[in-house]
Each structure stands twice: as C-alpha cells, then as structure tokens.
Image (cartoon, rainbow, N blue to C red; front, side, top):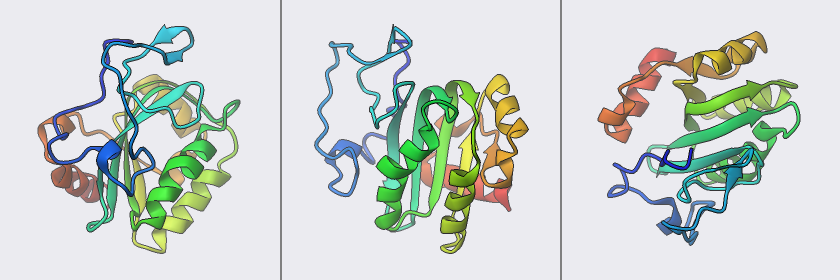
Length: 183
C-alpha cells in the first residue's frame, strides 16, 4: 500500500496545500517518512488525513468558479464503526460547499472495503447539493465495495459511475463525463 500514490498529473493545475480555500491549505508532506497507516499497513505520505482512522484522501482538484471538486480516496470506507461519511462531510466537503462547490467526484478505485450504516448523511448531502444543481458521484468503486454500497441503497443519493479512463482526461472532461452519465 505504501507504493500507491495519489494521482499527481494535475499538480501543475492545482495543489490543495497551496489553495487558501482548501481544508488542506499549508499542509506539509514528507517524501520519505511513512507515518500514516491503514490497519498496520503504511500508506504513501502524500495522502491526507481528514480524521478517519481507515480512510485517507487527496483533493486532486477544486474549481470554485465552476463549482466542482475531485477527491481521490484510499483505504476502508467504514460508516458502521467510524462514520466516515460524517467525517468527510464535516471536515472536507461542507468546507468546500461553503466556498461554492456543489459537484463532488470521489475517485474510489483504492477503497478496499465499504461498510454501511445509516443513510441519513447521504440523503442530507443530496438534498443540500440538489438545491444548487449539484451532485455526488463515486467513481470506479471496486466490485466488492460496490456490492455493499448498492445493498445499502446508497445509489438513491450518490451516483456510482465507471470511468476507468479518468487518468487520461483533464479535470473538466472528468466532470463533463460524470455529468453526462448522471443525466
């Protein structure tokens, strides 16, 4: 797991640690010191801790003018024990929403497991964003995690999208492709 880096080919366009509106503003990273773990497995130091013990993220792009954010996730998304959706909302997405972002793409190809709980945070999130014409899409969630996500009924509130080629696209093209699939 320590070899899985957050996607870095958009860093010439955006870096969260240099964005004064980002919840990760002025964050410093080490390329050599591995200190964060998911179940005793070290992860690459470029991933951001946002308060979950089992899930980390990287804000790859925040475009305040066009109202979208692309976030990459790694680890175990655990709403049952850790209430990760509440933590994501309070520590990251609500902060971005207050700055004008209403469209969220969560790249989830490195989410190894998903454990559901109450769907009220998802329902509330959808209601909040739909007032602004926004949405949430989870992209490339692995099959085993997607099964649990669907079984919990969460696609009523969050779109599940397959977009395997997202790395070859520019951020605006990712948003457009997701919007096309949602509508």
